[in-house]
Length: 120
Image (tube, rainbow, N blue to C red; front, side, top):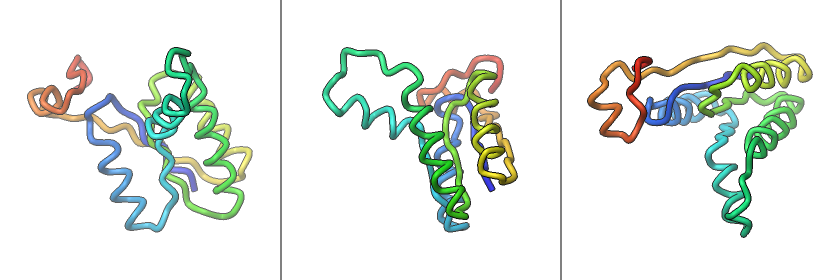
């Protein structure tokens, strides 16, 4: 199974995704971690664009085809990224579950550095 977490920065998705991965013994694939590693590789002036997501899709698919439960953790803001995660599940012949995390407390969300906007 592929569990796809999405939500605004600071909404709590990584905290929840990590706890669930630990409880279920799942692989946790976090796009932010991948993007940070790409930046740390030395070419910090180059915009990494969709590279973090593309790498995450590949890592997730490799683990899904090994029969592992995968929890994907990303903002996942665009229809194209949501469709891409679902395509990873389809190619791996597993069920996909999408979870959007929303912080219901605007003050707390701002304190965490998130964009409280209208969705929180």
